[in-house]
Amino acid sequence: MNRHYLLILLILINVNTLKAQNNLLGDYMFYDSIRHNDCRLIIDPENNFCIIKDESILNNPVIINSDTIYHVEDFSKVIFAGKYVIQSDVLYLIDNIADIMFQILIIDDYKLKFVSNNYFKQGTLLLCYHKYYSNGNDKYDGSWENNKKSGKWIFYNLDGSKSKCVYYQNDSITNQIEYD
Image 1 (cartoon, rainbow, N blue to C red):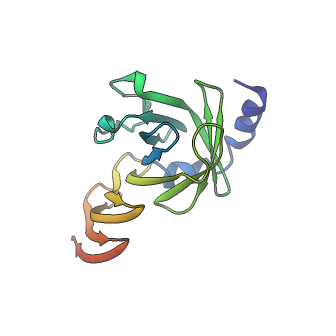
Image 2: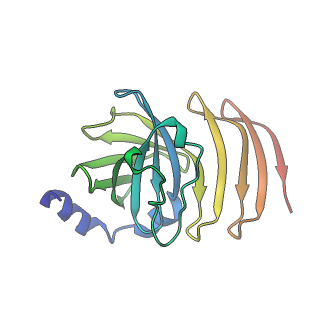
């Protein structure tokens, strides 16, 4: 690994990792407009990440647990994999495969955006459709259309029980069902 990236990793690994583990765990989808691939960024509780290409695996769950995220059936689909750290509102992905570092802006609980890299188009949005709590339980699950929340979103409590079901159209709530 390039010494510059390793130094950044060592400095930042202890900064705000709890924020990363509690707020960013999940699956983020994005479109690689340069190579015309649907892609998926997966972030796990052990500060691991991987970026996978190919639309066919977007619907297949990846196991998130304390062991690792790399329970991927087809490793030829893994484009990048390595460690991540957070400083302020920037997520740094330090790749172990191609020795590349990505800077991703944390917009909110649902959206991230590539801001600096040499591979994906700057400004590309990463949209979270399945998020996890740090204990591995689901936090929410939903879908996007034209970069806006759309259709049925299910939200969960920390213990894994359903909290509510919210229906969206163009990011606006059209119906909401609360669970006990």
